[in-house]
Length: 284
Ligand code: HXC
Image (cartoon, rainbow, N blue to C red):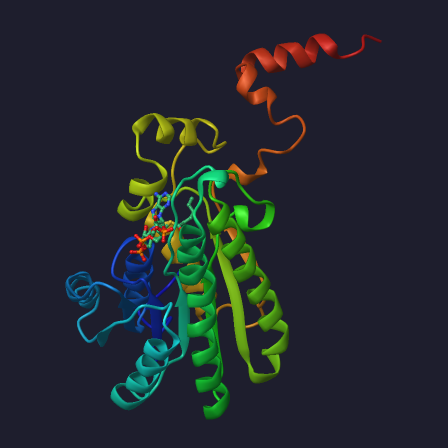
């Protein structure tokens, strides 16, 4: 679907691009021709990741900045450096996240704030700085926010993340409308279970949980990073110029569990179900 020209001439900033899904998207975009900027908190991680990204394409420009997206001054400084050192930026992927499992009654205000600061305020800080950059330059651009499937319907035991991601989804739709007149597209991806070291250490700490996650997914498997990267490339590229304000779910069907009769697939095999349906069919 993509060639090395798909993202040719575009420079994309990926927050939290030093590991996990951010790194997978950075590599995918680089292979499709983009120059890449990543930012994150840990310098060593960024250094190692930028080498891996650079290996994807011989002539790629890859830069990294050590930035905590919670701090709007650090974010503004990064955008000034990008302007001075690179000169152009066409896209932003707000991927940096934070999450942990907790009963909501046991959360501390500090724990709630830590997640909302990274996810919601971090996304705002980067989006606000990038939006102003584009508007000032009268340049078109694309923003992609990584949310979750539970941004729509909430989830037990990840309350701060659910609240923050719901806010990011609202930001996606609000800005898609407001900034369409500046030719700035704003979309989201809502990934289901894509295993990464960071998320799995905090959210899927034992193999039993992972097995249950796979069992209750109608596709009976976890997501592959490349599948997410492909979607990100498509949404960031000029293949999708009329798509804005959209949140695309990529979860193998996991979030469709609520369909009223979907539960019967957990009760018996397809063969037994067919026999039961046949027995229920009225006879002429
Ligand atoms: C309860 C916790 C906690 C835990 C931290 N806190 N971990 N509370 N259970 N497991 C509380 C602390 O007690 C503290 O509250 C406050 O949170 C801040 O913690 P710090 O460690 O001081 O903060 P910081 O060093 O900034 O770390 C932020 C973090 C950390 C979010 C807590 O986990 C982190 O850096 N995460 C980044 C990577 C990450 O989380 N990746 C997974 C993303 S997955 P007090 O009250 O003491 O101040 C994702 C996808 C979702 O988002 C979809 C999945 C399917």
